Length: 404
Image 1 (cartoon, rainbow, N blue to C red):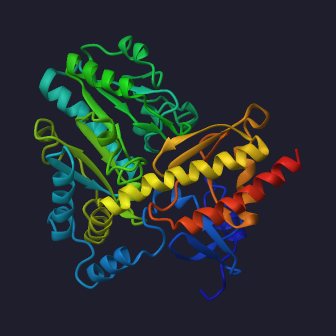
Image 2: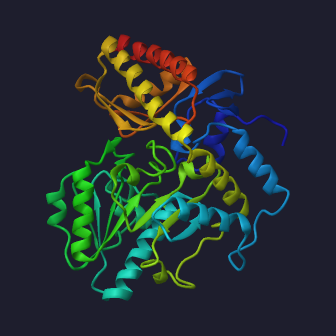
Image 3: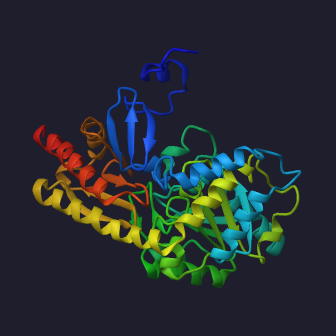
C-alpha cells in the first residue's frame, strides 16, 4: 500500500475502543516527536510511562538491531540467552529468586494472581482463595485483572466477574483489617495508584499490609507495572518504602517501548507454578528480552536514578508556577517521573480538556481519571525540554482558562 494513512482510517478500519488524537506521530528522537505534517511535539506522556529512555535511544536501538541479526523467536519448548540474561539481571537487582517473562503488564498481573491462588491452594487448600485489592486500583485489561482492579467501569457489561475478590480503601489500613482473614490468599496493591489518580501509598499503610499478610499467611503482591524500572527514582518503588513484597509485577518502562513484562517472586512461592500451569507464547521472546536487558542495565545507574529525582523537582516547580498564575490545580503529587496535578474545584472533571489544547501547542500529556493531569516522560528527558514543554503546557492551560 502506497497511500498515507490518516486519522479517518482509524475510524474506518479499527475497533473503536480508543479515541486517539488527530495527530499521527511518525518519527521520534529523545523526548521529541514529529507528526505527518512535520509538526514537533515535546513528549510528557511517554507512551503512558513506557518510553523510559525516550524515542529511539541508541542503547535500545543497538540492542534490538544486534539481536535482530541473531534470533527473534523460538517457543517455550526452548529457552534463549537474552531471556536468561534478563532473568538473572532482575534477580540480582531485586528481592526475587525467580522470574516469569511475558509480553505486557496485564499478563504479568494475570500470572501473579494465578500464582498466588495456586500457591495458596497447594499450601493451604481450596478455601484460601480470596484476593484483597483496592478501589480505584488498576491492574490490567484481562477479565481477571479488571475484576481485581477497583474500577467497575472496566468490567461492567462483560458478564459475571470472577468470585473471591474484595476491595478495601487505598491508604486505609482499617478497611483491610475488615476484609483479610484465613481465607485470603493475596493482597494486591500499587505502591502508587496510577490510573486511580497518581496517589502514593502511605508508608505506614504498606507496612501494615505486610504485617497483615504475614499474620494470615497471605501473599503481598506489588503491581509495579507503572512505578517500576526507575519511574519512582529507584529501580522499583518497593525499595523507596523499604517493604518487600512476595510477588512483584513489571512492564511498561522495562522494555523502553518494546512489549515485555515480568513477574518476580521467591523460591518459597515459585514452585507452585509448575510445568503446564501457565504460559505465554511470546514470553521470553529473544528480541524483547535483549531490549529489556539493555534498558534495565542503563536505567539502574546512579546517574539515571538520581536524575529522575532531580527532574521530579523541576516538574513540580514548573507546575506550581503555572498554578500560581492560573489557579487550576489543588494538589501536585507523585513520585519520580510519574507526576499528577489534580484540578482545583472550579476545574473538576476537566483534565481531559487540556490534552487537545496541549497538542495544538506542541506538547503531549495524559490524564489519570477526569480530574488529574498526568505526566510520565522519559526518565532522561533533557531539562531544556522540560522547560520548553512546560511553556507550551502553560499556553494550553491559559487558553482553557480564557474560554471558561
